[in-house]
Length: 396
Image (cartoon, rainbow, N blue to C red; front, side, top):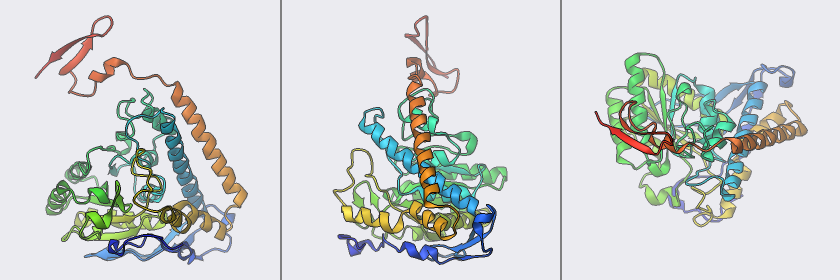
């Protein structure tokens, strides 16, 4: 489907044929016979590079990985759709930014790295947290401000966190997570532990000055920092071509190498992140521009249809949807039937519904929690007394 309205000044082609993802070959005749059978495919489109080589388009996978990708992305999609309903029911308050459409970035990145590598991102962070090993119960509890949430109900949608899995949070200040990510990379280089940090930001944050300052010092010190621009083509309601003179974000590093990736193709993301990790450990920072798309508006107050047409959104869904891409690969290799995939989607829906029901049972934080996690223990303001309504302050 052609876009009914898209300025040629954007220079971006949102719709690329899904059928190209099926240009593949199999090394063994029956992939369905063995979960670990090697399947060799090609990424949907070639990578585009800036002052670096390009990764191979050939990617090896297996029926087991394909089915895992399908289930994990279906789970993320269902989770975000459920969050939309909870917000409209006023069970989620405040800001809420949904990730549906962009699942391939979170899943492909996780497939290429380990939990010892670090990830830090902006406020569209629910699926990244889930990919790092977080649970649905933690997600929905945090979204509804309950004690069972990953940030004890005090962070909400924009401040998920899982330090034990190398996830250093969602951040509400536009672009501010990038310098923090470069700081994590400095720590990794100092410790010589052969790990990297992925610092994610959107095209709307790509013009932030602090991003370039952090990139400069990362390049100067050869830090293992990978800056990932999740380019969903709209910073809030502003199209990329209206905000950036040069929307080729992978070239923005000038002296820093860059790679443009089809962010709707999980295997392209996986291949690019694997390439970027190897590069960063040897040569320092690299920029990855993930060409992706969000189906919902920027946040829950944005209908998402005032600055783009419904035909554009449905066109991307039909031609580039990351879950449908995997579904077609599964069918092409006779790995599962349509009924089996439908059953997985039913299981996912049930899993999400059960997590929501449990999250609703989690209590709200105690009022005294207002004074915790602010200062180093022993300093700052704390509540005390029989009803904890008295406060005292201790300063260094």
